Image (cartoon, rainbow, N blue to C red; front, side, top):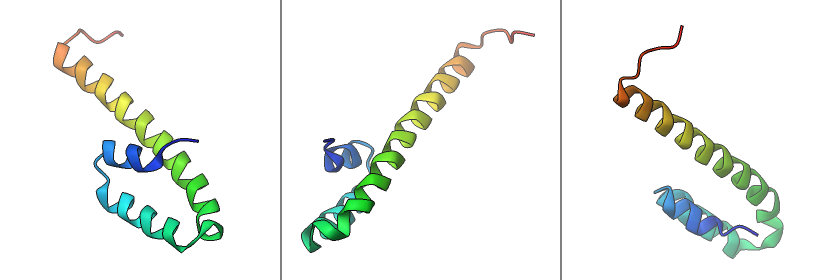
Amino acid sequence: MRDLMAELKELRLHGMATALAELTAQGESNTASSKWLLEHLLEQEHTDRAMRSVSHQMNMAKLPMHR
């Protein structure tokens, strides 16, 4: 299983990391669906950041547009 706390901190989402810690402290029944959703949101965030990074690098390289 993924280390959600580490991923949240890596993405500088410290408030969400704190909220996850509080949810986890309440018990497993409260966190099962939350963890599933959070894993998918983190995956999408990683993908989005990678796509924006490539887009930014392409813009900074000032490559001619392909037409």
